[in-house]
Image 1 (cartoon, rainbow, N blue to C red):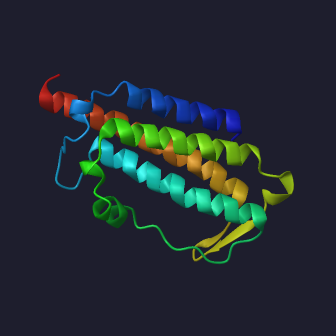
Image 2 (image 1 turned 90 degrees about the horizontal axis):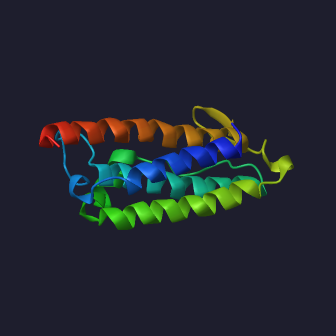
Length: 154
């Protein structure tokens, strides 16, 4: 994946966030389903974790990095208690910084490896995976938003 396509994925999710009625952002459709605000919070976590991974891998190989436990992080950080517009703005700004970093990655760093329990991953693989993760949650967000609208009969 090229960075232009990645930027398009980010822009697409940002457009979706900007078009979301904040009154719908805290509706929970099921006990085990994240609210729209929690989905955004999870993507902020993803940006923060990948920011560290990218910066460290630009400098060389990475042998250890703490695991990310999505459910725990979303719960303990209480994202659903955050203002939706502020969360969306924070996500947008964090991704602006990540795109800056990704554009500055030297070609010789792209194959630096993160040694994970499930196998090594290159920096370039992580960059591609980051965009794929946003796209997956964009689809989830759209589906969740539609469920909320159906539930509220909007």
